Image 1 (cartoon, helix red, strand yellow):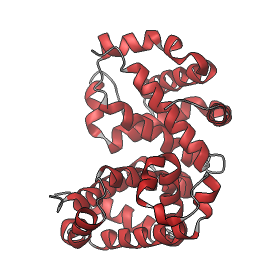
Image 2 (tube, chains in turn brown, yellow):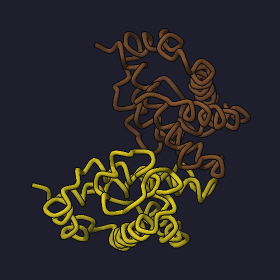
Image 3 (cartoon, rainbow over the protein chains, first blue to last red):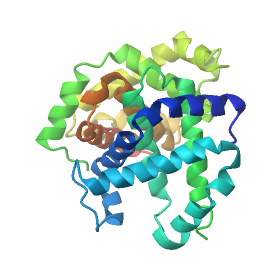
Length: 142
Length: 147
């Protein structure tokens, strides 16, 4: 499942909107993850995960920032995500199932904030993109 | 069995009361077919599914989306007995339609995304969580009679 030229254009267009509120979108996606899928909180016993927590905001910002970097380097995802891929494989070891869950809550958050731009085609492109990012981040697991 | 708290039931019924079943059904089914094109395998008789706009404008897709979401409305009215409510439909999806239950999970999540797009801020993380429980409950109920 590779990204077409059209996909890449749609991904960039949505990112242009997301980047105007990147931190709050990243934070909201994480909040949605922890509320809908409480088991994901097990990876953050050291965090205050309440709404408004500085740690939640910091981490949301980090995650969305990494996604933004991926968008900017979309033709080189394997190499641009290489360090993060190692981090997730050897240090974080987040079970692969959770990447689908976070991908979903990112899409929900984008849909909630930018319904007009989040057309069916944009939705498809972002779903493909996040699936690809997830695959790269779990590639070195074993 | 899935249990809904009073708050979850309230969140679900409040939002559902504002849903345009016809439009939302068509949109959710349409997006399923666009985002996950392999799901088109069940709809050979639907005619033109060659592009996103063809799919979303296709009258058969809209009609079927409405049918599916109307049935979903039964779930909202029977939150305490999803398995019983969908028993016959479960048999139908297994024995006659031969639909992989994974498709129910895909459609459920697409529906959540469509609702987020419609309700924006009102579709809070807590409201979403209640609906995630609902779509999972419905997917499991529809898969329950598979053999």
